[in-house]
Image (cartoon, rainbow, N blue to C red):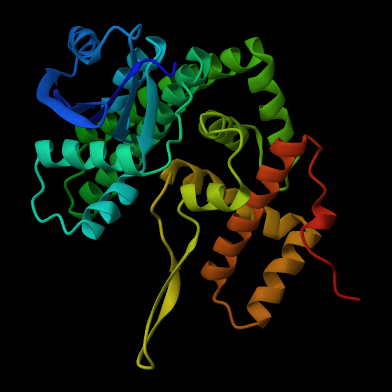
Amino acid sequence: MSGKVIVQAGIDVSAKELTVAASRDGQLFGRRSFNNTTAGHRQLLRWLGDGETEQISVCLEATGIYGLSACLTLAEAGVAVMVLNPRVSADYAKARMQRSKTDLADADLLLDYLQRMPFVEWTAPTPERLALRAMLRRIAALQRMIVQEKNRRAAAEAAKELTDLIRNDIEVMIRHLERRIDRMKEQALEIVKRHQDLQHCYQLLQTISGIGSVTALQLTAELLMLPADMTARQLVAYSGLDPKHHESGTSVHRPARISKAGNRYIRAALFLPAFAAIRHDQYVQAFYQRLLARGKKPLAATIAVMRKLLHAIHGVLASQPPFDSSRFTRLSP
């Protein structure tokens, strides 16, 4: 490994194109664009090197589905991949006082970050974990479509435009979407049953107060895509449930809010379980009431319960014991 040429590349990802800036032994040797397709990914690999005489590492932003295929192709070829939080790269650009924002400038920025900052390698998820998350996110999209159809029905009724034809059409669409959701949930559960790691996580999550089978399935799909060594605080920040403070001097003291700079699917999955846990678990209820007594508003106290539940989830998945709600908080005498 020590005798190999070190090749590093920053990759800016868009829906149709990968813009790449690459260096060899610290010296920039080229900038190119490749189609964001399987063929384009193979061309990128050939351009970077054969992996026999080069030690290749790349850095790109987390851009959801657009960058995932490229990450998988590169990782399978033995390339070390670092996936960067877009907020980190944005802050890094501000620190460098970068004024322009183009695809090429972003690729140069990611290459500079790769050369200067500690490298954290991305681990490719297994195919079944990818499939499970894709199914659960599709279910979430279908559920949003049902809400939209119901809103259209209510709006048409309020405007006196809800004819029998329109009502029937909307209700047919809702029933169709509900059948698709049920079918996809069955297929997702089949994947969970076939793989022991998924099933074990799914069962452990259901021991936590407020979390039923549906929420456990949603959380299994999202949480098992994350690095195993992620700390509880990192998990809270990744989920966007970390507090965001805004204070300046003696005059600016805005109320703290959650950052929401993270995975919205985890936040959405925890909202209703937090209500259920507050209502049915005496320890969670005691924690909630204590926050209200300290002047917290009900919504802020509920979000605090969500954050506490996420800490409990991290503990359960890290050390594997069933959830013990008595550790949530102490009851008042």
